Structures are given as structure tokens and as C-alpha cells.
Image (cartoon, rainbow over all chains, first blue to last red):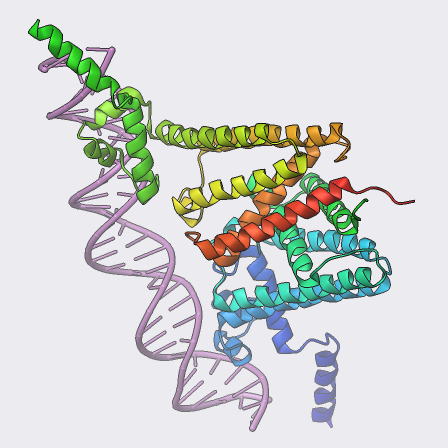
Length: 218
Length: 218
DNA sequence: GAACTGACCATTTAAACAAATTGGTCAGAA
DNA sequence: TTCTGACCAATTTGTTTAAATGGTCAGTTC
């Protein structure tokens, strides 16, 4: 009976945080990677932080690279989710595009300020991580294509090729972020920087939308 | 008389190549910097290449950084010159913008294939060189502003703020180049790459122009 | 049998030191 | 005025050694 109570108690505490071990590891890794960068965070540190053996980490994740990948994909999934919901709720394609641009910028700021993007990640991503990013961009592209197609249908926007237009738009956005980072040699983005970049991104989005709304005048 | 002939002869040979020593040094440096990168080219190598003493280089250029700066500014001046002429000859602003974009791309290809831009230049430019690039971008901006203003006058293009529009356009162009380089991890640009990038840049320029030509429909 | 561990290993990385190379100077020769 | 060899401080490069790291595995623990 004592045994049963103990067991029951343990089950309860185990359920209350609603996180299994893999999630705990993921969170710790996320925090430490954000603190020191993935390269400067050892598996030992993560294990110590969780008061568990390093070997245990390898029970849940095959290697460090896959752990890092899992952290990144978790964040990407979260972002894509909120993005999708935001778009679904909105009817006007032009407005959706504008909202995408600013949401994406906010995610960018988050990544930069966590050191996930920038000079620190110079020994740039290994193949596995690069694949994650590529897949993420493809998902983004699909979302933007959906927006453009909606605009196409109601005759508001016109593009010969939705895929190309979406690619171009995303590359322009990405390019502006990249140039902004390079121009200012930033390691973190404060409110002032963010305001400036938002302004530029909004302006670019606006012109892009108008460019797609353009009608030949006869 | 013999002395006079000798002197005369020397003056002639000196004029024929039409290059003084500083130019010779500049050319050698340009070639070697292009070959090995500025950081991996020593002043000794440049001097040896010219069969002169290293100390002589310092008679013409105060230090290595300024020599590198001179090389870069020489190239920039040449590019800006051809650009300016190309624009002056053209009457249609939209067409001028399109031509600028492609000319600028060609200069970009030149710089990349010379190793002047890309992963090799990671310990990125010191203050002096950064200033040169900044000045170059300002000159570019002025040129684009001229184009936009011409469009403004004949009512073809409309922008609230020519300066901002020019900045945005240049940042978009720069961003696309940057993204292209990062995406493909390129060290040199072949014809296939170039064609692809040209296409994208042309498409972006087109949408940008249409965005500025947009008229509110009532 | 699933969850976990300490001890172990091969490979990277860091530290420490010496040797070579580098950017830059200068008195003086041509 | 143009150019040089000899020279210097500082950085880069090579080399060796020690420590730390990612990863494995036989074997406990529950």
C-alpha cells in the first residue's frame, strides 16, 4: 500500500509538468545553446544541468547535431504555427502579406538575440541543420504562395508564376534582413534597430504588393 | 649630346607605358590580391613581383591598408564611371533602373570571382576599407536618386521620398546578391549561376518599378 | 524490457612555447 | 627624389603536450 501510494504520487508529479525527459533535455539544450551557442555548449554541461548522466542524453538523442536540430525545428514549428493561424484568420491577401513580413521579422529578432543567427554561427550549419532551414523555407514559401493565390483568385494581385513570386518575395525579405545585419554589424537587435528594419521591410512589402497590383494603362 | 639622347630616350620609354611607379604597384597589388586575397598577400610578395625593395612600396603608399584601399577605389571609380555614362545616354527612367541593376550585377560577379567578396573576406574589412565601401554606396545612391527624380518629373514614377526609395532599392539588390551567395555557398559565379541571379534581379527590379508606377484605382 | 549509468576510447580542441613571417621604420646610398 | 638593406616589434605559424569533447557500451536499476 505504501508502495502504491508512492507510485501514485510519482505518477502525478510526473504528469503535472507534462514534460517527458526528451522535452526536458530539449528545453535545457535550448537554453544553454542560446546562452553559449551550440558549439560552446558541451553535452556534459547539458547533462550536468539536468543532473543526469551524459550517456542518458544519448538514450534520447542519437547525437549532438540531432539534438540541436530538434531545438531548431521546435522553434520553427512554433513560429509556423502562429503564422498559419494569423493568415487563416485574415481575408485580405495584401494585408496577410504585410502581417507575414512583420511576424517573420519578429521571429528573426528572436533568433538573432538568442545568438542563433549572426557572426557566432560562422562555422556555418552542417548539412543536417542546413536541411532543416531549407525545409523551413519551403514551408514558408507554401504559405506565401497560398496568400498570393488567394489574391490571384479575387483578381487583386497578378503574377505569371506564383512560385517564383513567392520565392522572390521571401528572398527580398531575407536579403533585407541580411543586409541590415551586415550593415550594422549587430550581435543583438534593440528596439531602435528593430523599428528601423520594420520600417524598411514594410516599405518593401508595400512596393512589392503594388507591383503585383499593377495594371497596364492604355 | 650622347647624354641628351639618353635622356630623351628615357623620357620616351617612361611615357610609353604611361604608368608611373605608383600605378605599377597598384596593378601588381591588384593582381596578387585577386590571386591570394589581401590577407594572404604580403608586401614582400608584391615587392618581389615588381623586382623592387619592400621599402620602396612604403615610399608610394603609407601602409598596406591604404594600398588595398587604393586598389578597391580604383575599381569602384571605373565602375561608377561606366555606370554614369550608361545612365546619361538613356532617357527612360525605368529602363535606366533596369540597366543599373544588370550593370551592378556584372560588377558583383567581377568582385566575387576575384575573391574580393565572399567567404575569403571573412575577417571583414577594417574601418578604412569599410569607409570606401560606404562612400561607394553613397555615390551609387545618388545615381539611383537621379534616375528616380527623372521619373518623378515626367510623372512616370512616384515616391514620397526619393532618398528612401533609392536606399530601399539598393538594399533589395544588395540583399538578393547576399542571399544568392549564401544560398549557394559560392566562391565563384559561373554562367549558369549568373543567369539565374540576373533573372531574379530583373524580376525584382520590374516589380519595384511597377510598384512605383502604381496608381490608386477609384 | 525500458531507463539510466560509470568507465572507457578516439578524436578535437586548448595551452604553451619556439621559429618564421609579417607590416612597418630608418639611416643612408644612388 | 627615388630607392634600398638592415633592423625591429608584433603577429602568424608549427609543434608538442595536456585537457576536454562527442560518442560507445557492458552492465545496473527500476
